[in-house]
Image (tube, rainbow, N blue to C red; front, side):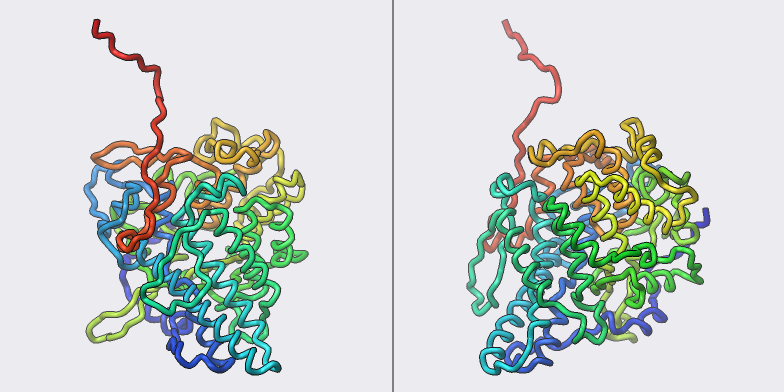
Amino acid sequence: MKIIKYILFVALVSVLNSCESFLDTLPDNRTQIDTEKKISQLLVSAYPGANYAVLAELSSDNFVDNNSILPVNLAAFERMHDEIFNWSEVTSSTQEDSPSHVWERCYAAISTANHALKAIEALESQDTDIDLSAQKGEALLCRAYSHFVLVNIFSQAYKDETASKSDVGIPYVTEPETSVNTTYTRESVQSVYAKIQQDLEDGIALVTDRYYAVPKYHFNKKAAAAFAARFYLYKREYQKVVDYADVVLTANPASQMRDWTVNYDNIDAISYDYINTEKVCNLLVIPTTSVFSRIFGTRYGHNHAAMAGSTYGSGPTWTDMLPCFNGKLYISGQQDYGVFYPKSFEMFEYTDKVAGIGYAHVVRAEFTVEETLLCRAEALIYLNRFNDAVADLQTWNSSHLAPNALTETIIRNFYVPSNSLFVKTLNNDKMSSSFVVTAAQRPLIHCVLHFRRIETMFDGYRWFDIKRYGIEIEHNIAGKGVDKLVYNDPRRAIQLPQEVISAGLEPNPRKLTPVSSGNFKLVNNE
């Protein structure tokens, strides 16, 4: 395999010159939102400008502690990474990629959406001829999506209508902030999901592609449908997943998949092409302030078992490494420290080039055709439409240049319990009695989870899949040993920012009822 060595922190001048539009922001003048144009401009800042991938990836099984598997003593890029990997509360940072940053940016986006909705209401009441339905649809979708991110980061996974009433969610904010003394309370996960669903459905009915100069910087019809497919997958309403995914995929999803046959001259070209809005596969791209890519080559890396179970491992129709990654995986520092695919590479925006200061950005391909295809495949399995599910999985398999065609027989022979890198114990039934995976469905579900892990690497969605299925994972921490995250571990809900707790919001619980793991007897002192 061809692995290319690259040292991080090089200014991506060529990339930034060609993608300034990703990083442009507009002034947020909320005192005079009195025209259609100003509302449209305001909605530019209604997207969460934080990258939750660092929290999610370090919490998952996609990263390992290099110090526990190599004869090295590497330092973490920052102390916060130690805290996240240890599933501890983050107290050392409120900067980029921290819980504080994700929380603040998501609620800032929600506040913007609420101000836009209030302005739309006012303008429409003044002028009955004005049509702001497209802007209203976008604002509702933005509000729904930021809440969706927050509840999946800071709460337990959705279980069902009853069980999720007992899990603490997040505040669902629907009014613009008009006072610094506003008090919020956390709703249940069930309540948050119900409100997301309402905003989502209302927004989809209104959203359009017409008023955007570049639709993929905004929620458009296909991006909205992809959001709905993901939302209903997490909520386990499988026919709705299929219905919305069909809007995205149309009759020929293979023609919309990313072209992995393209060769690139350098890492800049790969990273920019991955988020290119002209690509059919990219449905919505969101710029974030993030230093995610600086983690590579430090203490925590995509390495060993994490790598072997995903990007640099075998699969049902390939050996050693999925061919699409050939010539596209990079290292920082030593090859032993792990690899990365530069989908999350840094783009630096200088505020002062002489002083060398500015803002680090990662642009996320937030919704893609590939991930939506895998949402549909998973839903089709639960609808017992195995042939259709395998067809979708084969579309993904073929587009990623696997040398052999995927069949149901191959899936059932590969995803067996002894193949532990790719077959993890699912605790879905312990989370909800209504979450049933039959014996016939199970190998196909393991296949789609494997493909999702590869497809969404460095995006953070593997963590959400781990939470959804109650998959138990271990982190081997140098100097401490192995820590296991069980299916009902409270730490699956990342702790709220310390400043939010200090302000009076209820923290996430951190105590788990002890369960004996051995055959112990009381010492007889007689």
